[in-house]
Length: 244
Image 1 (cartoon, one colour):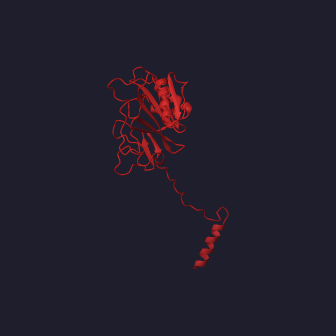
Image 2 (cartoon, helix red, strand yellow; image 1 turned 45 degrees about the vertical axis):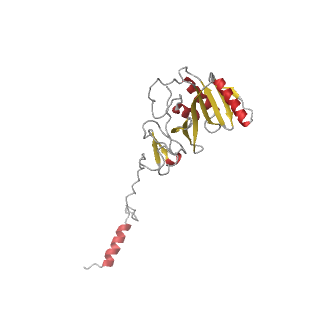
Image 3 (tube, helix red, strand yellow; image 1 turned 90 degrees about the vertical axis):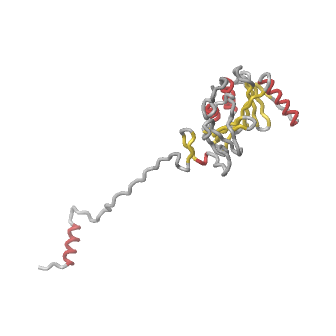
């Protein structure tokens, strides 16, 4: 007996409708594979590597324009001597003298973990990235000749008053023995003697209200007060300033 194509189709449809058989065919395509999260390293243009840490590129100042020296506008360690950084100087240079400033201690005291680097222009500048403001903040250090921190602060107060005609007060920094400080037009200064082996008094300056809190400043000055001077002819301890 010949079976028509219509009969075969009817039998197939009935077979599918029998009890125990699914009424509709489920999608049997395999689930799409999950994409693995790519590992980010220093080759990714979105990040910058400083020490062993990676930071978003936007957290670090832009690259210097073509022709500008290394360290101008962005941290650079290729000189093998210091982490060089200057936000505007076309030809920045490392600081050749130690002042007892410790970048790691300052980072902890002021809450700015990203140390950008140093450069010298009449005094040594140390720059940190302020994540909240999105801009670099700074400390500057130098030697000054004076009999004592108090004498240095008093002389600076008199000089500023004579030049600008405004009364300037200085005071002892209570948390640090034999350290004096003053503020004038948004800039803070502190003078500290410390170990007698230092060739002169050391002065620290900063931008009031931006660089660090008052409590943090006391910690930074206190750390400098306890720092030891480098032995004659000694090499610096690393690319990042570290107190002895």
